[in-house]
Image 1 (cartoon, chains in turn red, yellow):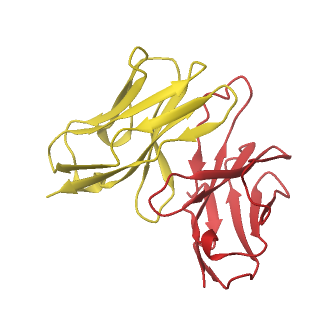
Image 2 (cartoon, rainbow over the protein chains, first blue to last red):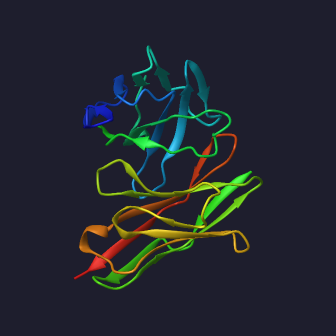
Length: 117
Length: 112
């Protein structure tokens, strides 16, 4: 029944050791998002894919990269995690057209919690 | 430009009493507004949305919200709190540019 699935749910990595988080969706939504959420804070958008078009937020560090090989999958790569990158990473999807862009309902996965040692 | 202000970072109520979580927004366009709930270590779940239809919007789990353009508010209410309502609540505004802006969240505590 799960529609947006994130793996792994919990990831522990060492300082500077690359990590990849994955997201898959069964909704066939055209937009996929990655958010970073630190403790007791609102989710912060890192980037999103509108179909195959990649849209990076201006303040997203270069350390964060993303790939979307097909409609169903999206990956978040953190090239050299620092202690400040420890957070919950949330994947979300939406079916958005420019006509209905304002009705931008987001469907979230359960999140991947990253710990950096 | 758009922004969202959740007026209370923490709200505490007793089980069975009403819940009010306050949200004010700013938007240059006719906004769409949403409330999401997040339980500990979980993703966000849509509670309800306003997209320029009826101003009183009913959502899941007995929650509702009223869009008041004159007050630029979209407060979330529930007549009777349940222990399972304890969670983090986010008010979100979305514009025709398709970008969602989150409020800082309100932590709801429900006391037995």
